[in-house]
Length: 100
Length: 100
DNA sequence: CAACTATATGAACTCATATTCATATACTAC
DNA sequence: GTAGTATATGAATATGAGTTCATATAGTTG
Image 1 (tube, chains in turn brown, blue, cyan, green):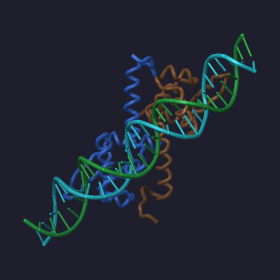
Image 2 (tube, chains in turn brown, green, orange, purple):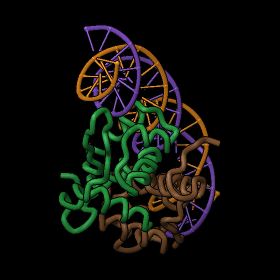
Image 3 (cartoon, rainbow over the protein chains, first blue to last red):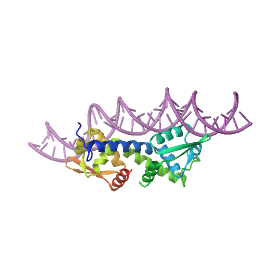
Image 4 (cartoon, rainbow over the protein chains, first blue to last red):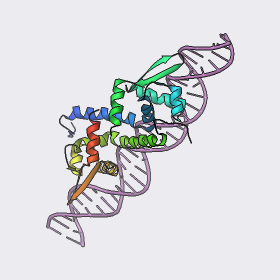
């Protein structure tokens, strides 16, 4: 109905921009970007992430949830510890980002 | 003073993450990302950007200012019209982003 | 079982930022 | 000069999202 057509196919492109925007908003946040920077080097549990960052446990947990919901990280539990790592998607994204 | 060292060199990496975060926050916003999507195809004046997007003149102007301040776009005036286009940095960034 | 550790979660609060509104500036045409 | 068009800008408002706090859950150890 509205007359804008950003690129070739209006709605398709619009959706694409929307989902890219959503993804970028998640990774652009500084605390989350720091977490991703650490996870790029391999799996870490939450308490390790706390030691690397000066973020509270609760905050880290919230951010990890966001990253997990976005499919950027995954986790697996070993006893009390929960270990987080990048998914393939997460690896791809972080690699692209740090080229910028 | 604080004990975190995200990557190799604490402060250096921290600054890098901070500036990347700043940049990504600017381009992640959906309205701005739409504008960039249009500008990827070439120079456009503000009134053209208004026709492609359903954003107000004022809002577009504000966003363009943010993008310009970040060095992503530049502009040149021809009569009443102000034409915006991507800088080299802007082209590099948008190319990277749309690969994600 | 109770005590303890590691992590998750929901709600409240705070803060940043997108949006709107009114107005200013710059340029053109008459 | 005035009128009209295109764009910019500052302040106010609205909205979304990050942070904190308290508490819950899950697992371990004794």
